[in-house]
Picture 1 (tube, protein in one colour):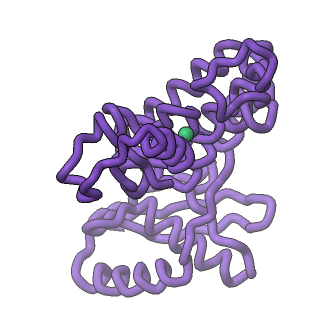
Picture 2: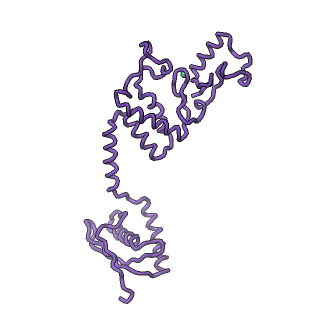
Picture 3: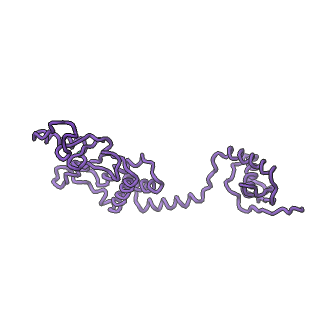
Length: 264
Ligand SMILES: [Zn+2]
């Protein structure tokens, strides 16, 4: 949204036009329309794009108090997230309270933009805008929480409890490795080179019987960048692939490495 500057405050186009119309009617229109020729204390200057530009907080109109849609710095993002936390701390009775409607006589003229809306509408407008930002993970988590509570009406305690449960579940999940075919080809090449170049301490790795594999063992060793554990996993996954099984991301429990003596 465009913004105008008047008497050291920013104004939305509607309010700026209202001010200009009043000044014009009072004969105070600048004789020279060139902005360098008059002072913004005497007559609004503008328009300036993007609500006056990036700032460390949301810029609001000095008249109706609507948000001027200015971009925010990282500090500005944090400021909005803090205001959301303050709003949440008020509890539903506070943030769902409807701003006095026009004509009730209780309204504060500077909040005209939100009259008839719940109080949380003030921060929700800024929060919705943050969804298009590329946020830090910590900021994104705070934004998601604020939107869930203020916009979607979730209970803060239930939200936090669900998040904690989700966090526990994630730890147990085995993440399948992406691009496993490419990795396997790369590793296969490395392995051939390594095998040709060196022969270190060798181990017999014994895999136990599992739900879908018979017991199996391989000869492995620590080579350069690759450990015997990695080589064991690679060999095991190759055997699994033969049986049409999906690769594992870590060694199954019960795997044993037995050093092979050089003289045997
Ligand atoms: Zn305004």
